[in-house]
Image: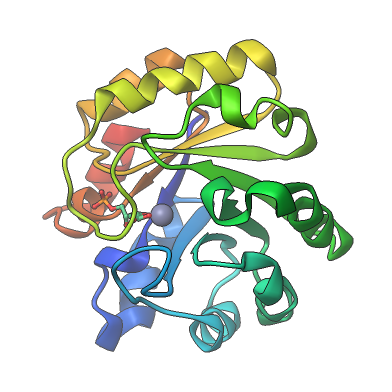
Length: 209
Ligand code: DX5
Ligand code: ZN
């Protein structure tokens, strides 16, 4: 079973509750993209929004931090109600272990993400220490970009090192690219534009499942 995690980056922020309720019956997870304007060129949403989302849904809150110095914000996102916190290896480097331990100390699931140019070799020492690896198949920062198949090959490399670690893919997922990811062994797919621009959201989710 593929875990589908709709990205609210493509939702209407003025109608966020309505748009979360549109996907809620069909998925177990909700993907929340946090951007700081430093690690990525865009600014999106932060802790207060996660706190408000926690009040209106029981979906598993899959929080993708695209921010510098993520360790500084773990307590705030944990208190706000995140269930899984994924941070970027490129944002922590020598502080990676410390950041993993900080998330674990809050009894949350831990995800480690890599941008398209980062190799599996660079993170090989951390794969057995986390619950999930998030493979970015676009440069992080914006929804609606084109899927980079070269990056998707990393799914199989990660699975070879640890078949039990969850591998999530984020960026450019649609009914065609979902198949490629599934073939490489992906466990979870994030989709923003594909789900939120669909005429029939239930059918769109069913297709990528
Ligand atoms: C990009 C974000 C993604 C984004 C995916 O930086 O991490 O989660 O919302 O959007 P789509 O599915 O539209 O590529
Ligand atoms: Zn994301």
